[in-house]
Length: 75
Image: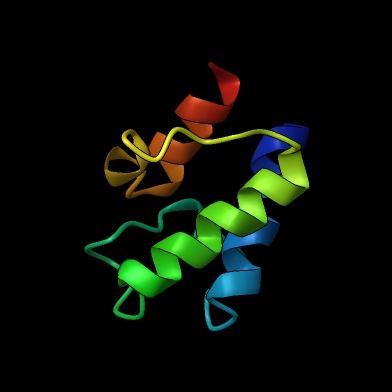
């Protein structure tokens, strides 16, 4: 399994501990009830720390699913 996917899954599960592995891979703003603006900010902070990246907060609104975040991380 891809290391970036696994690390991102762990980030999502840190912020949303109720998610199973499968749910984390499919997670989105629409599918995770707890994913609100506070959770988004927390998740972005966790991702920045884990991946040692700086996320452009103008782009942050588009990072509303596992796949969108993964795409951003892979550049």
